[in-house]
Picture 1: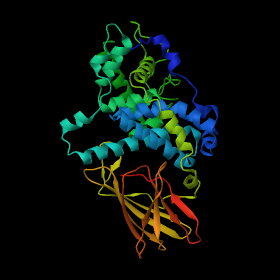
Picture 2 (picture 1 turned 90 degrees about the horizontal axis):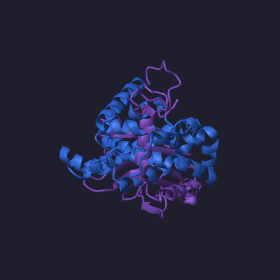
Picture 3 (picture 1 turned 135 degrees about the vertical axis):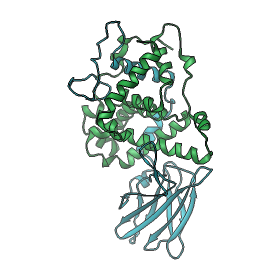
Picture 4 (picture 1 turned 90 degrees about the vertical axis):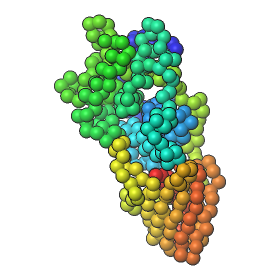
Length: 197
Length: 182
């Protein structure tokens, strides 16, 4: 894996203006069939939707199904989104609902014990595969895989999709006051496990 | 502010952000830099499948004939049967009951997850009585379900997402929005 320097961060979205902020009518145009607008929204949110779905422990195949359903539901129900700024939160919430539908289906298919749940959980790349000597990004990624589901889901919401704390609180069903301190605790745990303290 | 950006309001107790370029005295990355590393690292080690964007494009034009229909939305909040509040904060249910009404035609449908297998069992009632109800899934030929003389129907479906189509009294066909499945 290529080593990412901290200096690279400006390339990866911090402070980036979202497409919906650039053009508040983009969603409406997309829903009315404007391919260019739809593609811009896809370009902006494909990766976040994918990463949110994977943060629930879905396999790649399941995450693909979730992404497909999210896009169809955006096309079908997107006109109910009153403010363009609500789009990221709507997508994250719909991703969560679709992911939970799949997780519930799993539970019904297999009379799961805790061990089986752990087995079914797809941890993504094994931590050991990511550790490379002296590679900060690899050690951070390896440490990330050791965090709890709750931490990984929260951080995935924090790093992508231009979500506000209010959005994230709504998606997780928590108070806004929960988000900042929990984010801080998860990041601190990440630092410790990545050897960054 | 967004959750992956620097904190423009240091007094906000909900944010422990440091400024994106800030580092602590030992040169460690700031919180925002850590999040950016995670975002980029995840994208590199676990990229979306190559065809995902094109699949998303197809959603824009799914089944133009049916997508263009007037869409009926539930008249009430979905009723979750045997539901319980799960650890996730969302109600978990094996069955979802939905009611749609448009221009005097009422469609009630119960969607039940089949145990130990994939797929759903649909059972419902349409009033005034119609001969059939359509199961509509994007990219798949619609399937007609025959109704009995009371307007009752039943079907087992394996595909999703799905909507139901039906004919109004004057012959116009409408569909429901895509159903929220249990």
